[in-house]
Amino acid sequence: MNLDDYGEKRNFLSTNEPADNAASKEDKDKDLNSELSFVVQKHYASRLHYDFRLELDGVLKSWAVPKGPSVNPLEKRLAVMVEDHPLEYKDFQGVISEGNYGAGEVLIWDKGTYYALGASEKNRSTEIIRDGLGKGHITFILNGNKLKGEFTLIRLKKSDLKNWLLVKKRDEFAGSNNILD
Ligand code: MN
Image 1 (tube, protein in one colour):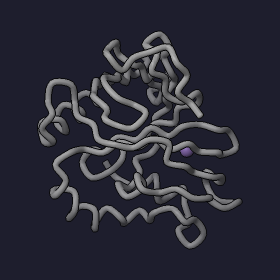
Image 2 (tube, helix red, strand yellow):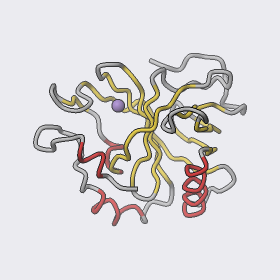
Image 3 (spheres, helix red, strand yellow):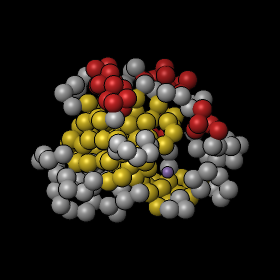
Image 4 (cartoon, rainbow, N blue to C red):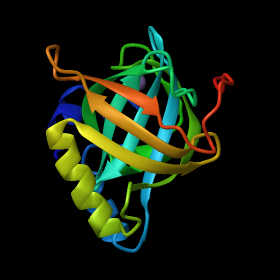
């Protein structure tokens, strides 16, 4: 968990994104929040995608989802793991100007809280998610405006280790409707 890759890709004199040292302030705040955060940002980069981010240990674990999340359990969405982002990135939206990494508009598409399946308490959730990320399989409950209920992220074997699948599990929030806008 560190923000070296995040910092190396960006020039903070040029981009309006949060700096890679933002975590120091967030560290002080994070223990005050009793729930873990998630955010999905719609990113009009050279190729449109949705960035799916889960708070863990003071950073945002991040995946780029080219087709965006689905609430249909039959639609498995490729989610490419990218560099950890500072926690305060969950509040970022705006236009990353030309010439910068990821240039284009970023909109907060959904945000809310999450916990690991079977562990609503924050510290226990953190342990389960941290362990699951190492093993390549996490299951969690989202409480957002658009995304709700149980989802899973599964790392694909026999391929690039960055490639995961984001899949809705069957529950009362699953459906066949297209939720992307
Ligand atoms: Mn992106």
